[in-house]
Structures are given as C-alpha cells and as structure tokens.
Image 1 (cartoon, helix red, strand yellow):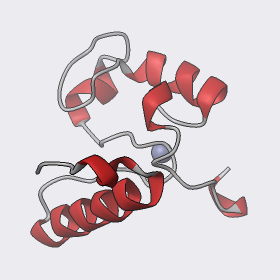
Image 2 (cartoon, helix red, strand yellow):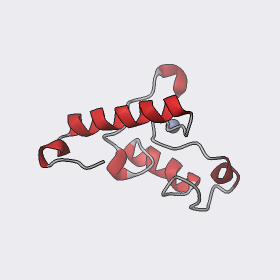
Image 3 (cartoon, protein in one colour):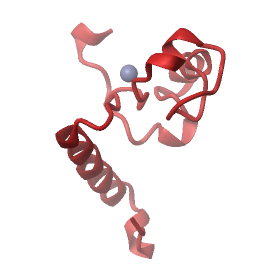
Image 4 (cartoon, helix red, strand yellow):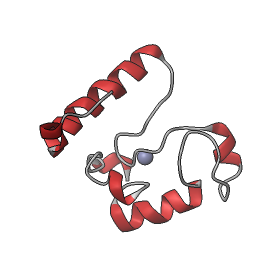
Length: 88
Ligand SMILES: [Zn+2]
C-alpha cells in the first residue's frame, strides 16, 4: 500500500492501519495487539531474547519499549490505544 503525501497525517495512517488490522483479523492471518502492536508469535514467545518472527524486536525489547513508549517500537506509539483497565 502506498501512502500519499497528504496521507502521512496521523488520522489517515491510523485509518489505514485499522483497515489493515481488520482485514488481517478477518482472514485469521495474524493477530496484532491494539494496545502495544505486538504480533502474537509462538516462537518469539519461547525465545524472548531473540528477534524472530513477524515482530522487528525481541519480546523482551518489546516489553522494555512498551514501558518507555507505550508500544513495542517508538515509531508505533501513535498506532496504539491506551489499555482498558482490565488489560493492565
Ligand atoms: Zn499488547
């Protein structure tokens, strides 16, 4: 998908992203967390220090980044929503 110049505003990117996530969920392809953007991956789950699978950071790095930025990578911090109370 190509982002148009004016498409770099946060709301447009969010809309495109939500659409992508919706499509992926509909396909059952993969599951990305709305809160931290981590994509569930069983292999990474078992190797938390390795960068492996669909995520660009290791699970432990993701957890550290989440504490710092509220997302698994700093540039994704605008792509996520705050957690609901029962998710903390
Ligand atoms: Zn999450």
